Length: 204
Image (cartoon, rainbow, N blue to C red; front, side, top):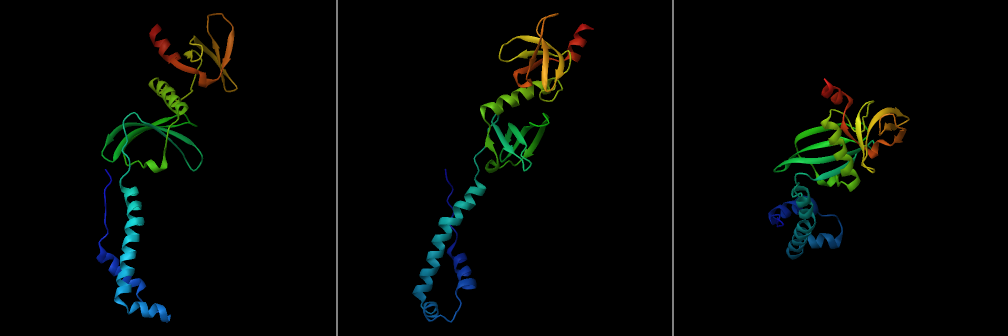
């Protein structure tokens, strides 16, 4: 439901009296200023203009669409860094959210923030998938795509499980079977199942 706001005409009268009803030396203008009907018409026209133009601007700044839990958004900073946000709680015009810095791979929780939808965009399917991968890493105390030797991982495309042998030039080198051949994979195709530290704790 759209809220309707009407600016009181007395405000218009004061604006006109203070700013525009002045003698300028122009014969036509000065005659109009002595004509009550013209002045009233001028005030009425300004009233309609302000209510037609300024009120929608006011409403757009004060009646934002509400957020919902589990919604994802993205925005780019002035440094062109991409951030992905997940809404975790909504309380009136304030929200809690987790945001992921896609460059550093780190996630941060923010509470009680008045988030403005004009400055963020709905996240794409690819961005949502990236955020969910980051959540998986965060559960293990790692930032996004932080692999270490001995980690157990799964290849998302093939569904196969392997162990990280090493890291090489941005790629992850895997061994899918003990004493088997090594394969290179880009980090984006892998999800972390257990860290090397977690696997060592299980052996103790």
